[in-house]
Length: 466
Image 1: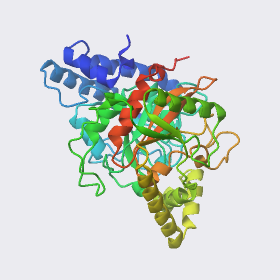
Image 2: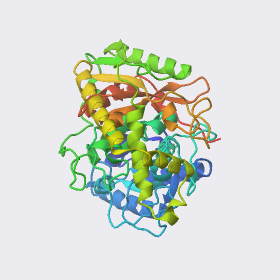
Image 3: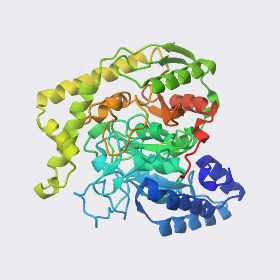
Image 4: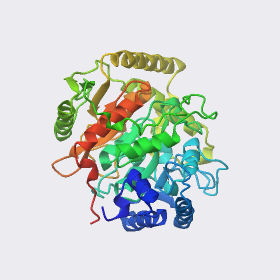
């Protein structure tokens, strides 16, 4: 590819190593894409071109000395604005936050990409506190899908996904509390991976508790594996972080799926799926069979987990808003307030029922993976829909869970789950295949996703600036 903004992170690093490409050139290419796309897309809420170019020059000097700082040295990267960054506004899409606030420390995931030399371009847009599956806020406006700017890229990591899809960065850091990395990955034709809970430490604590994950996003599975390797490992600030300081998730990606036993669930037994999406995902499952996997079409047999998740989510929203002053509460988005009000109505008994239900669900899925290596299913039940609404036409306009029934279940169970591009609808809109593994089966999920990805050119396709 002639434009450096279209190269993968892995290819950029290889080009830096030989001297064929400079981090300054790559950063300028990313910033040029941002300048071209941003008036249409609004992926960023904060960008510092001068700081990015200064970091790229430092990276260039390291590569010239043949002393790169780490795995990501010189790679253009963005950070979602629900992730704390030292010295940079931390607004979280909310008018309740102080515009002059400058955190004194990085979140662990940001600390680690700095350690590995990534060039940070800025922070990407999110809905208020990441509470919904689309990306708009009263503070920073609507983020639009590069494939069709009248449509949403999904959320809540929609700014991250739009930026990666349009070539504004090779890598992006996002979050996922109910699908927030996988939803926009599916809608934007990029790769989003929610690793096993605790694989990447989370700090500060999310209002949504252990549902929340910090996550890598990129255009290829290999790039996601590279970013995961750079950011995984324990941190004392997250008591649930895993003691994983040595795993290299870039190793073994080429192992393929031959001999794997994979369950294909078209709808988890309870969801309604758009026919176009259903056909594309079924074809993707068949392709895994062609690649040597033993694929069974079967549902796990779990009940609809919406009540369990909704109890946790609404309780988190209630907690987030109750921590605000009365004046701040007046500034909160109406839909977020409604969600919090549902949380206010919950009793301790209600929450304990949900907590026990979550544990039972996780135990069931752990046993299920004694039979099946992986579970594949749609990432989402629908293709992208118009901006300015919480749900597509025909579904509950107040409930974002209705059209993403396949994502939040794996936040409850903490299983690794990836969305990888698997085709386009008849109207040219992206569709994602979700691949789910057992707890700690991250490498297996990445291996299968890479095998599928490399069998097609979906991931190579780029949106065109109209």
